[in-house]
Image (cartoon, rainbow, N blue to C red; front, top):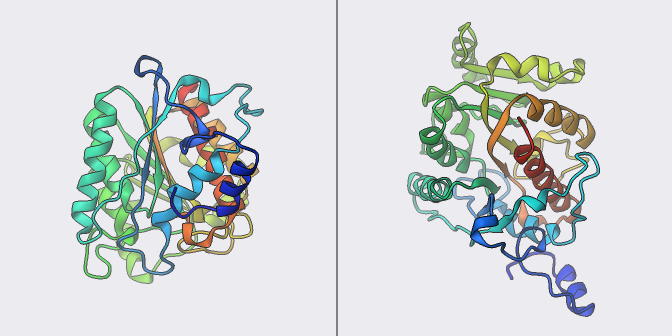
Length: 309
């Protein structure tokens, strides 16, 4: 059962609930009625501050088993599309590059079956492996990242495949990348960032947290750098630590559920979310509210993605 909140397990046993250890406690639907594959990726091989994100997927799945399945904001039950939970992927931590190849391979398998990938992390590095798989199926792909950190280092701690380098690796793939909510950046990244932002074509765009605080209409800030098909990556440290404290690297000055949800709904009405990941939940913290928010976010994103344009 893993290292999830043990009291939830005891509570379930006490009431003799037969809840599968799957996302939202769902029994696997028949293949012909399945549209979404939840892929838990237990990986934190390059974590530099607080280890434990490898246990994030377990915490999210455990919390999701107690979700109410009707989404009042969307007016539907996202689970009706047919959701299956895949076995937890534990990439090798000995080689970050090999770990990313494993993620890429698993996401490719999901896409070959015609399913929508909903990825639960795990550290943010895994996004690069997923994007490499996605771009082969969606040539017009763009990437939208919600993150407190720019992750633009060329290398960190002896590897180019570090969580602090993930955005830079994706940009090097030649995809339009938008990073929003940034409020932590090393000064040595500034020359690279200025060069990126000097182009007028679709490329890299960084929107500082301070700008989001000033502007209610977040979508207007990102729309011109997004294509029709978008891969969405949400690092949970985008949210303020007062709402989601159990993350790998918390940063003050973040955002709340309601304002972020308002943006995501507008965004999903104008673009097709072709896959998403939710990363950087620190599972070792065993903080139930953080895990529950992440699970609720995953359920809402499935609803948005499968009922979007």
